[in-house]
Image (cartoon, rainbow, N blue to C red; front, side, top):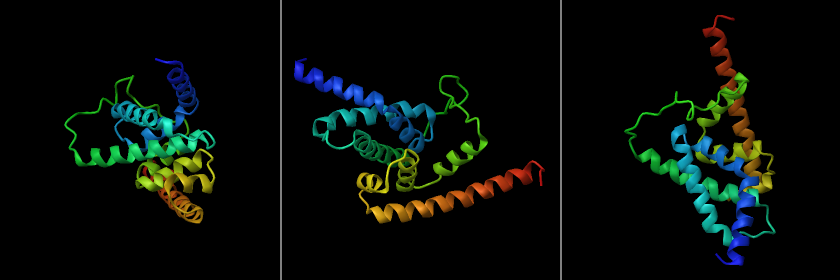
Amino acid sequence: MNVANQSRSEAFTGLLQRHEGILHKVARAYCPVPAQRPDLIQEMTVALWRAFERYDAARPFGTWMYRISLNVAISFFRSEGRHVHRTTALEHAPELAEPIPEDPRVAVLLECIDELNPLDKALVLMHLDGYSYAEIADVLGISESNAGTKLARIKERLRRTMTAHVAKEETTNGTR
């Protein structure tokens, strides 16, 4: 490996390590089977590496990484949706089990986010990561005002869904 490729590789590795949480969030949101998430993360990483020479360092790496990761995840989601799974998830295996959030409200929120369509999931993920409407719009290829409007509607839908879930839990557990 020559020096130029080595520094490119080191730069990529450093940026990837600083922003690796994005890969895990996107994989969690778009891949319902925990055992398949490492494959999706690998696919996203390969796509990022292949596109890295076209990365413009004047722009934030995180938004660039989100754009590519979301495209890969959505493609993965669509192709997986066409296949019938012939395997059984090993949800109880310690190394594959997903950690249960300590706050039950977080668990409910994650369930509600799982039910969103791919674009809405992307909006919520980026919003929760603190990206501006302009950055979200840039990554998703929509207008800034559309990003804000869609996000407001998604928040309201999530509020209603979470409220209904809590009411159902209270009724089921006899606290009402």
